[in-house]
Image 1 (cartoon, helix red, strand yellow):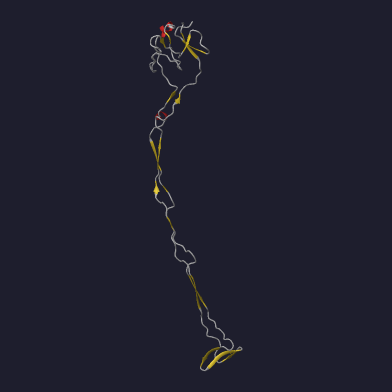
Image 2 (image 1 turned 180 degrees about the horizontal axis):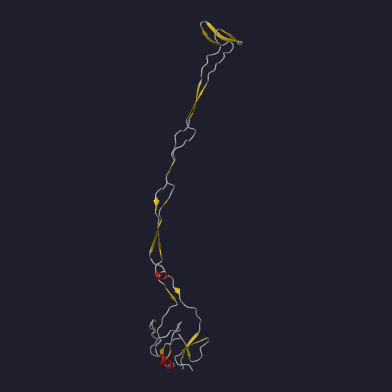
Amino acid sequence: MPYVGEVRMFGGALPPLWIPLGSPPVSRTTFAALFGVIGTTWGVGDGSTTFDVPPSQRVPIAAGTTPPLSDRVLGDLGGDETVTLAGNQCGLQGGIGLTVDDPGHLHGLGTIADAGHLHGVGTIAATVNDPEHVHAASAGEFLYVSNADIFYSDAGANTGTSSPNTAAAATGITVDIAGDTAGATADLTGDTSSEVTAITVTTPDTDAIDPTPIMSPFAVFNFGIFANA
């Protein structure tokens, strides 16, 4: 025979005279024996005609003082299925900025100077010298008159005392090819300055951590308190 106020767990439905834990307030008159044992330890009900039975909390613990554990009083409730951890409890320092400095690098091409080169053919002076030659006179052609002598060529026979050929002379020939002789400098302008990039990384705030489940693995039973109505 169980004792009035005893709590047990059942693997099936509760037998008669057992009130499920967590039930709504029950009558102080109908369950006078139980009310006499637990009173209003678990709640006053409506304050006059009813009272509360223990709730269906997950894990029962013993009342009393057991150092180094905390003091526990009969009827106390506590515990949570989840807990919200602060950032510093997770190894994060919330709200602290971490600055990463880039030692510097170049953007753009910079300035490139061309020492100079030719476009086009350029100006070339070419002098051609003729090593001298003579031109023979044609038949019947008068060449020149000197001292009353007329010199000419007749069917290949020379007349006169001098050669029927013209005097030898050198011919100077100059070839001028015009072009652009100027050297050009190419200047590609870019950004040659070295820049430092500052990157700031900020960790989440300490209040931004999602709730973490802390419930142990469990099995579900029916819990009841014996009333002996």
